[in-house]
Each structure stands twice: as C-alpha cells, then as structure tokens.
Image (cartoon, rainbow, N blue to C red; front, side):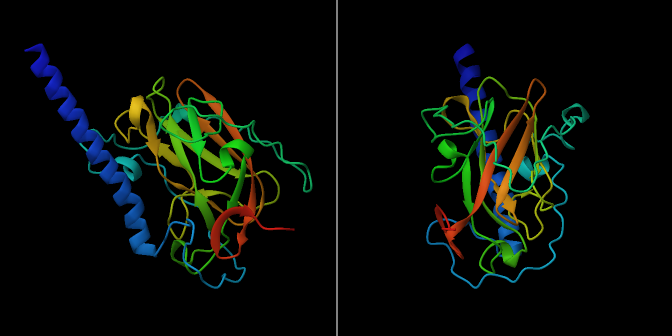
Length: 253
C-alpha cells in the first residue's frame, strides 16, 4: 500500500508539473501571440529598428497567475506583503563604473553558468553568467510586437533548498530608464513567482522562463526577495553587435 501511495503521489506531482509548465508556456506564448513577440535568439527576425519614442512604464505582473494559471495548486493573488522590502539597489552617477556581480558558477549539473548568491539565480545566453554583461536587442518591429522596449532572455533558477515565493524587481542604476519583465508590448513591473509546483528542473531545481526588458545600455540592478533571503544582482547591459538581431556580443564603441 505504501508503494502504491508513493506511486500515486509521483503521478500527481508529475501532472502538476506538466500542467504548470504548460501554463507558463501559454502565459508567455499567449503574450507573444497577442503582441507578435518573438524570442531574440540567434538569427532572430531582422527588421528596421524603431525610432526613439516615449515608452510606457512597466506595469502589472503582481500575481502568481502569470506563472501557474490553470494549474490545480496555483495560489491566488501575489507574493506576501513581507517580501516587498525596501529596495536596496544603489543610485550611481552617470559615467560611474558598473559594480557588476561576481562571476557565476555551475550551480546545477543540469544548467549553464548562473549568476547570483542564491538560492535564486539568473541565467541567460552567451557569457552572461561569467561576466554579468547582457547584450540586448533595442526596440525593433520584429520583437515584442513592436514594443518601445527591447530585451533579452533572462531565466531564473531556484535551488532545492528553497521552495517559497519569490519577488523580483529592478531598475537602471544610472539615468531614468526603467526595467521590466516578460514579453508584452508593455513589460511587467515585477515577477511574482509562486511557491512549489511551478516548473521543475532535474534534481528538484525550479526554473522560470522569462525576459528582462530594457530601453538603453547601462548599469542595472535586480533585487530578488524570498521569505528567508534578499539578494541583489547587478549587471551591465550593452547593445547587441547587430542592431536588429541577437548575437550575444556587445556592439563595438
């Protein structure tokens, strides 16, 4: 009977994980279908860059439903109020050297090099995990439905040691350009990641796909808050070496 119960539990968890993964893909893909967003991956869509224009500020995102809508265990609402700690990101004068986070490491044998002190880590393409430098494609008609915001893939990994809720916020440390998340024409202002049954990687690691959305090169900070920790990740964003296609290399000065 114990074996039968364990098997039933494994099948239930497997169903929840599959449903959670599907919900996440639909949430991001649904945004893409509605806005025409495409991943800025290698060989991505080539188009004419959009002219500089006023960009709407990031808004929304303060709900778990973005990541687990339609799954049986998706909590209502967003992260607890206690996670909304005071932002500890520094303000830097223009021209100040960007104090990027320390080089990342292979925190799991199933992933690439990830950045951050943990238990939540950032993961993107190219050398981001080793250098904390993120090449991104500026606003383009081919990406994010012609949004006034550019961006790049930024995924998040959660260590098996922590399965609580997570709040991710950020901003530019120099200047007034903001920072947003995910694939909408108007980016979301924050990421509210639900506890437990979201999207699991091998070995009990959680993983959330997503994008970080930017308007200009410079120094940026992300604050990641959980119930037992608060961590800061600082990175430098540069324009992709190709103006309308992601190359994972910075444009030459």
